[in-house]
Image (cartoon, rainbow, N blue to C red; front, side):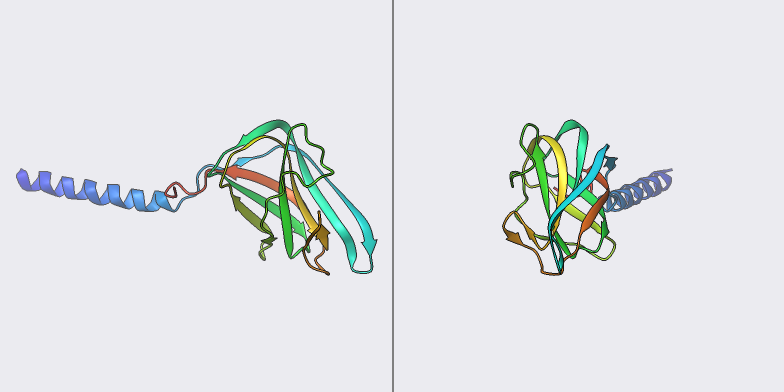
Length: 160
């Protein structure tokens, strides 16, 4: 009887450890964002648009939290982009909300941004491509990027 109990405890321990290892590498539930997707561009040159913007106006402002991951599926031929998280009440004509780092678009067209701070009351998520974005150079033949979809999750369950 004791040997059966010991075997059952060992099996339980193995199952528990295996489950934790598997869960550590499984993405958390991703919420697909809803909103109006649009685009605009300007200052067309021989190399294409000097600037190009694709945006999603969210149906309702949203608080984005530190640790969340935003995954943006892009269409188009941009090699790199800037992303902006525009707070409610701020005009979209300025650079407010631009995330500092230039993001290189991988082959599948999905970029992931892990937030390192809270972004309250976000009304619009936009992706900026072309040659130049708010005085930040991208690439002379960069091309454009259009948003196909955006989802938000807490990343992987095992990450801090």
